[in-house]
Image 1: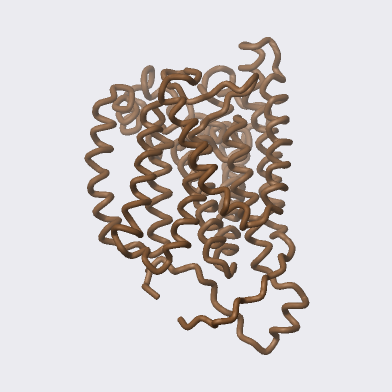
Image 2: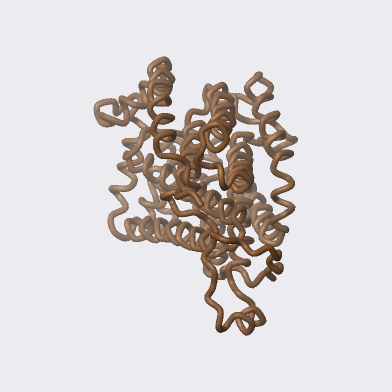
Length: 399
């Protein structure tokens, strides 16, 4: 493609994608309602206050809405210049947790205590990895198909963050970082042979990580035969499946679920979708899946329409980040994947996950503002064919 020697005039931002913004705000509000419904009995039993998680999640939701608004209006150039500082902070925080300076719970050390709030550095690491991938791939656009420049550096950085996740241990976050890196490199046009080779090398490493860990092997057995391990490792998934099954088409009614009565562990966090299935039924779950599907569709549309390569990579990566998390969480709760400990974006209880996902969503909305022409632009370009976006297709042909 021949480029003009004259620099392109700056594109004035237009309005945000209203339907996408409304869907995101709706998911955050829905999360507050469902966290209260799923946690009231547990909170009353554990803390003597049924509103314990509701109050905290409401505060997190308000902060998330503020983060969403801020990132929607930040300059894209500022985001790009902050790539390396954010990545450095994420690595340092992950190192602190891996060295045992964090708070332990459930056999893992994944949190750093900041006053009354527990911060999970792995969530920031995912965001930092995406920002760096977008920056690096846009900078190396013409060499992305090479091994030493387009493939190897990205795999090394991803591998470092994955190792830090496994040191906590947080196998789910490690898998998510690896999967995001693979998908983004594929979309950017990296050679399929390199990606396939990376997968083949990663398979024995993943198998060793699972086989060497008794609790991960128990999870695999519970996934394969949950009802055979009903009173052991399969307890959580069988209770989740019972929750979905008892909801039927329309559910038992909001607030009337039974599995949250101390039967289903993590009902307000990783398995909150099971409570949605029980109380709102198949229709409620279908609408929830439809909302996430709409977020993915509109996010990828924004990435495709924007003219800046970096912004396109950024929006596409953030969209896949949210979409893959939602898919994995729902698949785990429905017994389609082994338990991984990933939250349902915007809905599960947790401040770190909610705020990081709000930042990712704000970046998608930010990019959507540059995919809509202003009236002044339309007048000037009525007779001129709109240029195709510079974001590469998944086939990755060299330019």
